[in-house]
Length: 299
Image (cartoon, rainbow, N blue to C red; front, side, top):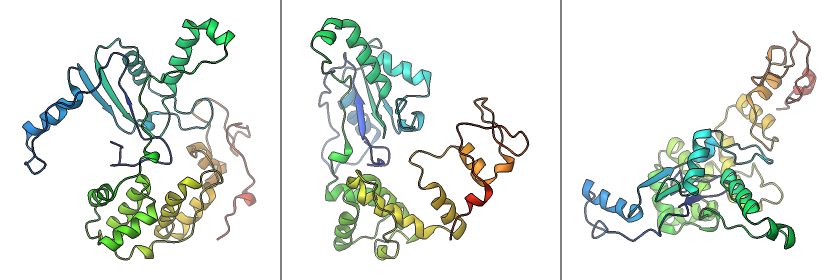
């Protein structure tokens, strides 16, 4: 399951990585009828299905927090050597029979590169004579963007996030608004739970045509519309800061904000590159430097 019940920024959903030595998951025993009470015993029985004869079942939920989100060749690379080694050993089958389920909004770049490198070493002639050969992914990818939630799942997600007062008409309206997009639903549910008493009635008070999906990403239009709800919850200064950093396509690094908000107090970056400040007068090539008058944000 995705990290938020179905949450994903416009990106990839759960990516189970069974490893080459992992058998197909057997059905296993169930907990009985749907109306039977949930007990510790029935919980263990539910776990027996995916575990089967495997030595381990490991769930890495929300792995994107440990991945590089910067666009380019490093996108999706794991920052943790331990996690990178764990996935590599698991994928190679050196840990025995096991199953790792990963939920992430970014690709598993490390595993993809390992597979490509291994293929080029074992099939050099095929690569040179016939050109690139299709690579078999070492994991089974499930893209939540292509698996829209049904009505029951939408209602359940809203309930889990705190929206417990929703009529059938309001449910239809929220479905149309969100496009059944998991993250859009989670975002609007959080806002309704925290700022509307958990009621679906009155959701139009948060709605507005603030943001538009960037060119080429029109499929995310529902999410961008719901993200616009947050604009009405910001104070004046917060709205101006958000307007200043919104044009950045990548996550804004802390040192960028230091130069934008306090150019004279900016310090050198942690990577040892020279910073730019009124004291040292040096230039940090990673950070754009502006004159104070260029930083004025129009209301």
